[in-house]
Image (tube, rainbow, N blue to C red; front, side):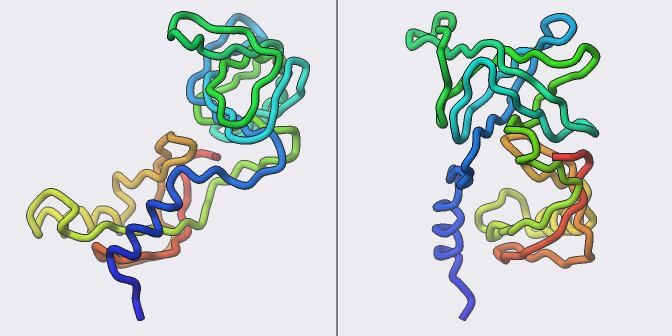
Length: 193
C-alpha cells in the first residue's frame, strides 16, 4: 500500500540534517575569500572527520577541476560572538574558518567541498529522491499549483540544494509530477557539485 502523507512527511523530516556516514574529513565551503595570490579563507562547517594545519585536501565541485589546498590555519567563531579563536584542529560539527594555501591562479569557491585528495568526485548529474508536498501545504490556487507543476516538469526554475547551495537542475527524463507524490529521478546539473 502507498504511504500516507504523514508517513512520507515523517520519513523526510527524519532524513533532514542527518550527516553522511563518511570516514574522512568533509568540509562544505559556504563562503570563500581570496587573500592575495595563493591564499583563500574558506568559511563553513566540518561535517565529518578532523582537520589540522598542514593537512592536504582537495576542493571539489563548482569549478571544472579539483584544486589542491593545504590548511595553513584554523579559526572558530568566539563563544561571545566577537572575533575568532585559533584552533589546533577542527572536528566534525564545528563551524570554522580555514586559511588555505593553493597554487597562485587557482581558486576556492563557495559551494565546493574539501576532502582528502581522491575521496570526492564532482558530478554533473545526480539521482535523487524527490517528494512534492501535498496541495494543502502550498500557497496559491489550484490553477497556480498546476502552473508550478508544469514548470517543474520542464525543469524551469528547478534548483536542487547541495550543501545549502542551490544548483539549477533539469530532469533527464520526461515526468509528470503530482503534488503529494514521491519520485526517484535523475537530474542534469548546471555545474559540477
